[in-house]
Length: 93
Picture 1 (cartoon, one colour):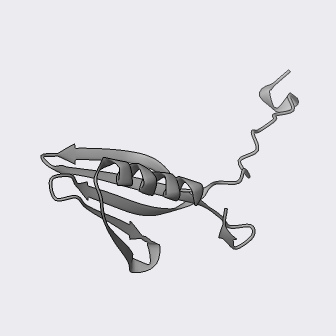
Picture 2 (picture 1 turned 120 degrees about the horizontal axis):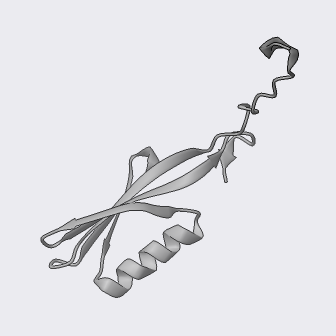
């Protein structure tokens, strides 16, 4: 019996991959300035301290955005967010 006598079952590589769009949000806590950078060059500037940051992150979460990274330094925090795009329907999930 040789190798060619066996039925070889290959994994199905035709699986659906996910596609994402990305946004970013930054907050300067000493000045209370928050800026959200959305797809399509849309920028949202909002004054706020910690409670407003939580409100904005919750609003983004309700729209399907999730935080995928965060960094900080000095008086600044920067979040990267992603949202799945559903290519089968041609619109956002």
